[in-house]
Image (tube, rainbow, N blue to C red; front, top):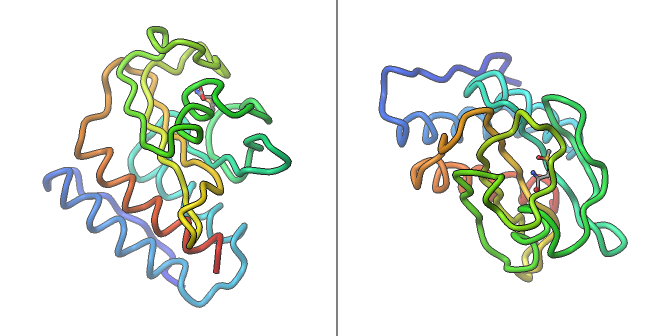
Amino acid sequence: MAETFLVNTSISKKEQYKNALLQLEALTEGEGDWIANVSNVMACLKYGFGFFWVGVYLVKDGALVLGPFQGPLACTRIPKGKGVCGKSWELNETLLVPDVEAFPGHIACSSDSKSEVVVPLFDNNQEVIGVLDVDSDKLNDFDEEDQFGLEQIGILISKIITS
Ligand code: SME
């Protein structure tokens, strides 16, 4: 198992995500336990990219329930359609939110969270099994390159959880 995860900030963001994905694939191959793997993926994202909060919520009994994460204390359950996470689940699509205060129904787990990206996680039947939630303590901190990069990482996380 790889024991380091490095993000080279002198290359383009697109390349940073590409390299991150390769490293995460190497880190998680050979380990069959999804909680162990997703926990390490969260640690890599948090400390490699310096995100304020990063974690997964998983669909259980009709709600999103907190899974492996890194960062401050978080809400444990989010109903479908509520907040950015619940909305991403309901719509089956990634939501890029530059200002969480301006998002109707945003759930403020932490008042320090200012912008976020939420990526739905799918099973093989294209059913949403959860979401990847990445938060920043700065306004407007994510763009389409983050969205694309995090969607690719979301595909890896979905594979880890469903295999
Ligand atoms: N911001 C999310 C709630 C989860 S936390 O930020 C960790 C939302 O509105 O869905």
